[in-house]
Amino acid sequence: MTKYCLTVACATTRGIVAAIATYLADHGCNITDSSQFDDTETGQFFMRVSFTSEEGKAQDALEKEFAPIAEEFGMTFAFHDESVKMKVVIMVSRFGHCLNDLLYRVRIGALPVEIVAVISNHMDYQKVVVNSDIPFHCIKVTKENKPEAEAAIMKVVEDSEAELIVLARYMQILSDEMCTKMSGRIINIHHSFLPSFKGANPYKQAYARGVKLIGATSHYVTADLDEGPIIEQDTVRITHAQSPDDYVSLGRDVESQVLARAIHAHANHRVFLNGNKTVVFQASPGSYSSERMG
Image (tube, rainbow, N blue to C red; front, top):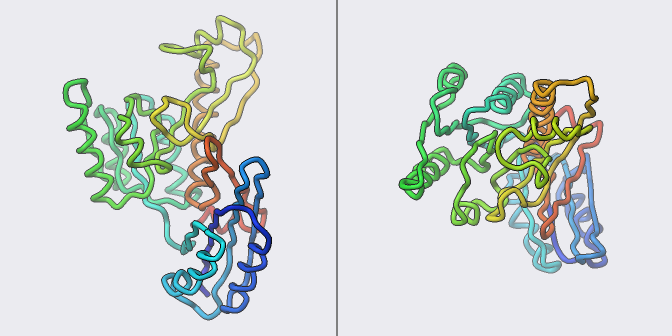
């Protein structure tokens, strides 16, 4: 049996769930997991359904046969083969904690993605990336060569057929053009001290103010710096007894965890853009294991 998931977004109206369930049943499919959300503020409806095709139907056949229902309800929809891992390009500068964490999670099968390339504006992590049998590209970025550098980055993305770019502490600002072109397909991670502590050494600034919570935010990248739709956040408590180095260490841990969870949700098609926000469906206990192993 082939496992698929169907994602749907449309204006809310009566009969959507019934239409989807009836379609799947009539086409020899068995629903294994289902999540839905009706946003009463925006009038938008979102749904994600995992199912098995007991008749082994091909994805293109499912899409073609579902099209009349999608047209009736004005749906944006997609079918995804759950056995196919999402191709990802990771971009990193000189902080490697998120990169190393992602390499490990992918290696043990904890993230259902295939890292097809790593891009950096420095050479620091070439060896660790190449040792993981992943192509490494060093693309220097300056004020003078930014358009050429971004063209080179996009060539790597397109040649590798990557569906997602992950900024794993990549310290260069992407152009508005690139953000627009890759809308909904670039995920970033940063500490959650903004806007209070900007610039260099935010953790030392937070220590000087006696902050009691360290947090991290993962979001989609938009032209508005660090203001894209949020996918995942978390915090860790700290005390007066901890040093600035402890702040940094705890911050790196929470950044790595939050970024991994955001990628996991995106790669399993559990994230829906909803204006300036997101709808993120959580995996049920019975489905997480299969999703984790891709």
